[in-house]
Image 1 (tube, helix red, strand yellow):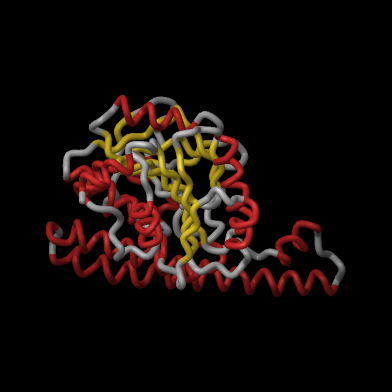
Image 2 (cartoon, rainbow, N blue to C red; image 1 turned 90 degrees about the vertical axis):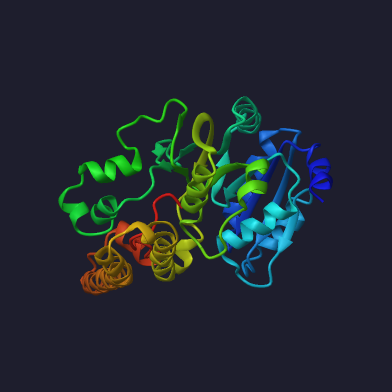
Amino acid sequence: MQTDRKNRTESVDLSVVIVNWNTCEELGKCLRSVMEAGYDGTETIVVDNASFDKSVEMVRREFPWVRLIQNSENLGFARACNRGIEASRGRYILLLNSDTEVEKGAFPALVRFGDENPDVGIFGPKVLNPDGSLQCSCRRFPTLKAALFRYTPLGRLFPRNPYTSEYRLADWDHSHPRDVDWVSGAAMVVRREMLDAIGAFDAGFFMYCEDVDLGYRAKQADWRVAYYPGASVAHVIGRSSDRNANAMIVEFHRSMYHFFKKHYAGRSSILIRLIVPVALFAIPRAIIAHNQLRYLRFVLTYRAKRALRLVTREEEAAAADPGAEEHPNEGR
């Protein structure tokens, strides 16, 4: 069985696996960038999580060379990625969010980096915001201190605290390759040999933290995890998750607890084991309440100004697309 699989993968260097949920426009841009990247040794697989926005029809009509896997329900990011990985044939698998666009030359650069570093099991390209600025896409493993400053009001009071900066690797310009703890699943390359050894994503993560968990397991198995800026990908954060933002806020914190329970709880004190689940239950509900209160305040102000004909163009646009909720994860 293992030998047959190896023979099937030898003809393809890189499998591009894209999970989609109702991002038809962004997915089209992503696939066009993959096509324009122009590297012969690739295959492209789209795993659709039961979209209802014509994404499937668009892929079939405009990108017939793409292998399309349709799920009958939304399986979440981790399980959908695993379906794509299982169907892939590449020596390397590039997991891409549907709201990314690949820069030209990225594919051969990624394959070359993998071939030159056989002990690297996971690596990620440089990820850029749509305006060309850097998006922090690689990090250290989360710590209690970093979480305390990152997901509570302490972060607003002390925005330059060392714990958050160290977690985000914010004191580094990301201009050269280096080993990191984990890279964002928005644009992540995984080596087939490593997956055969440690397994793919933990299906217990519906969305978020599956990339942290895979990096953790890779490190435990003595694989390196690396950041490689010789290839670039542009990423618009949260186009799928923004469609159900409050549910994703809850899901993000649920995934954080799953990661904590799986990797940290066994070596934490009883007090920490009691505090963490309570905090991860309370924080998302506080964020949602804050978002709802902020939106209500905006609506009341907007209606009052509209009655007085004092509404600006910016406020009209915000009312048409009130998507200013706090996002659970800046990297996804």
